[in-house]
Amino acid sequence: MTVTPLTVTLAAAVTAVATGIGALPFFFAKNISRRNLGLANGLAAGLMLAASFMLLYEGAMRSLPRVALGALIGAVSIIVSRHFLGGNGDEELHVGRLHGADALQALMIVGVMTAHSFSEGVGVGVSYGEGDTLGVFITAAIAVHNIPEGLAISLVLIPRGVSVWKAAGWSVFSSLPQPLMALPAFLFVQAFQPLLPVGLGFAAGAMLWMIGRELIPEALEDARPGPVAVMVVLATAAMMAFQYFLKG
Image (cartoon, rainbow, N blue to C red; front, side, top):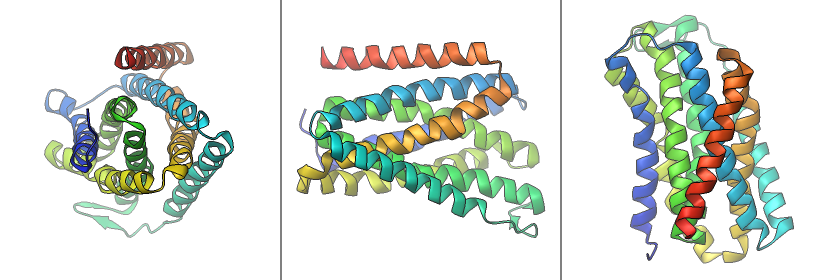
């Protein structure tokens, strides 16, 4: 299949819309157990881990130093953005009907999700620079990973009075950088092929930082280590098998 800018844009749009799916369980149940959220984060971590490994592998096949440099830049960029967002301590903040601490927590989770969505959008774009097989694999991994993110956003917003539809909207909003960044990233690596390993490494580094700093710790806060580990291993193995199927 020939990869076109439209292909990349539509693929990234799918990953953004997938985030809104995380709010759907609240149409049927107002309360989702923290244990289930923890297991969902473990599942997301496994998917992202497999995706990161594939990005690093594809990049290292071209230039190990460049992919290592990209991974370092990716990790540092997400750390800096996380620190910047964490610096807002305005307790008089208002977000819709929310105010004070509730509004701050809502803004923080949406802001953090939005910040790291930039790196995920880059990941989709640069993966299609390698070809449609890797692109489909990374798109699928990020799309499935986005569902627990939407659930996490909804768990913060809905108990504070935000409607399910609005929570779904905020979830999709947090992932809008993915389609916005995917196309420029794809066009950039198409024009500057020597920088493709750097782009692949950047996406992998950002995702690995999120796995180690956010997804796994959050999963372990809500669920026992054993079930979380099982979810991580099963999700990683499933995505590796999916990649094998795509290449076959």
